[in-house]
Amino acid sequence: MNDTPDTRAMQRSPIILGIESSCDETAVALYGDNGLLADAVHSQVALHAEYGGVVPELASRDHIRKIAPLIAEVRTQAGHPDISGIAYTFGPGLVGALLVGASVAAGLGMSLGVPVLGVHHMEGHLLSPLLEDDAPAFPYAALLVSGGHTLLVAVHGVGRYELLGRSVDDAVGEAFDKAAKMLGLGYPGGPALSRLADTGNPHAHDFPRPMLKRPGLDFSFSGLKTAVMLAVKASGDSEQEKADIAASFQQAVVDTLVAKCQRAMAGTGMRRLVVAGGVGANTALRRALAASGERNGFILSFPRPAFCTDNAAMIALVGYLRRGEMRPGLAAADATARWSLTDLVPPPGVAPAARVPG
Ligand code: KG4
Ligand code: ZN
Image 1 (cartoon, helix red, strand yellow):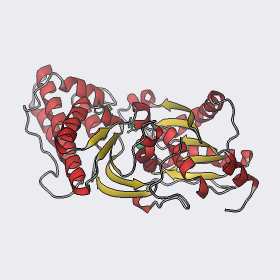
Image 2 (cartoon, rainbow, N blue to C red):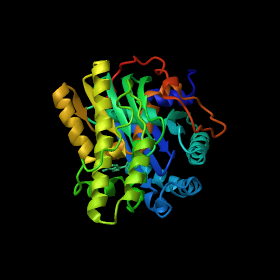
Image 3 (cartoon, rainbow, N blue to C red):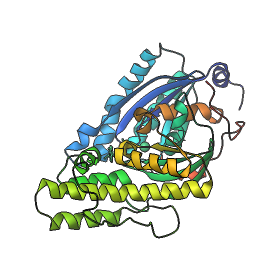
Image 4 (cartoon, rainbow, N blue to C red):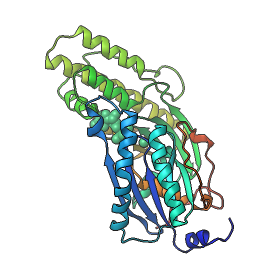
């Protein structure tokens, strides 16, 4: 990198502004040598609830409304430090929503005269455990389970990701939301379904455990969804019948996730499994994974809930770790709906297995 005023400011004490707008959370954060300085999130869940799912056009418009106030909020929280670079979510995600963050990053980069970098949303999730004081050492395995993602990844270092398994159809949170909708519960339905499941019999229905009998670590949840639909149609209106379907559905999901995680830990020989994403809040899943960890000798960890769900702290962190790749003068806003995690490479000049300082 040339020694410009931009890069000199970066070398002194980098402070990275992170911007996340890939789906239905608008989030902004500041990250520096001493870790996270400030972060703020606005969730659009209430906005999309009446439609039973995320409406992309509404998401984009709401990002436009919320992003500038959130930037002002984190700057105030951190005492108005000089920003030396901007990282925004380049993809994957809803392209209209992503372009809001991209436009703000490009404009702000130009007006502040600082370099900008588009980063991978999933890299943010994979590295989010490093935001915690007890950051795990590499390597670790990560199970990302949310409304948009179901991924099992071996994290060997920054930019060194091995995709072990993913859902070939619905994300697991999406399956929870769809099953909840069939049972007449609100959106997002995961937490409500899980509460209803507490009062049901998990063995009442023998729902499919998709792809368990096949080798490999991919997931599929659409067959399970169909099985739930048929059970709902065949059932009466009683609360107990609904609770039994909810409990049996949840048990099928938990059994599938646990079996694949166990297989991944045994296959890779890794000792730590990090679970992130909204579905990681599911108590039955947590309990079953913890029991599996004890039986099979792996350590289970969960980043705090605010770092598990979509946030900008993880985007600012990736920007910080990849600050050597930031280029001055990003002229146009750019983003992508699709981007493979395995296209990423380690940042130049950073040892692949480096720990985050501070
Ligand atoms: O990571 P997240 O907050 O956001 C996005 O996907 O953007 O994940 C939300 C997903 C939703 O599908 C929600 O239903 C699910 O996580 N979820 C749960 C639970 N809490 C949230 N699913 C099952 N059990 C829960 N306790
Ligand atoms: Zn996400």
